[in-house]
Image (cartoon, rainbow, N blue to C red; front, side, top):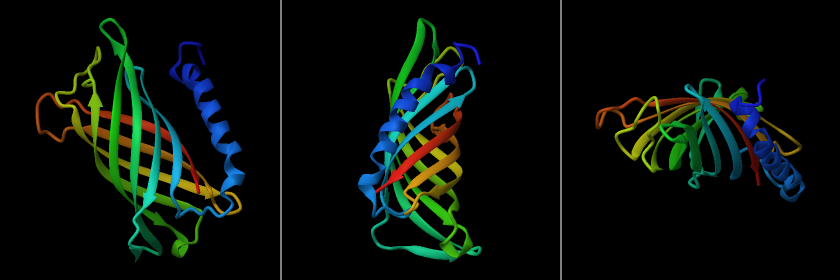
Length: 191
């Protein structure tokens, strides 16, 4: 991997944040995979676009769950702050993206498996509006949808990893609507 590769440039920041979260793990001995979490996330898209996010998930407090397809579906809120970076006309451009997404998670094996799949659809706001050498969003408010597969581990399943695909666009509300597709890796710590 070359020194200019996006993963090479972001690796030290991600490693430091992941170590900080892992070091705090023993503080949360009563955590479970269905409890609130804090997370770090990194993503890549075409044209050397990177996204780094911190966020939190909060389970729906009404205890809603539904048995479905041999598993159990539960819901949670996903709140995040993200920094998107890409090549611009005068160098690297940055957009701060704040968002919230209601999310449904299917935990397999009657709800007892460490593995899960999830899907969500929410909204986000970018400041400044996302404009790069290759594309320009026409709106600051956009929709974000994702699909993910993940698993939990640890004595209380407090550690979580996800591989995600996320699409962000304005849903055709205004032209141009180029959209952006990310492949993301997330580490979450439940408490």
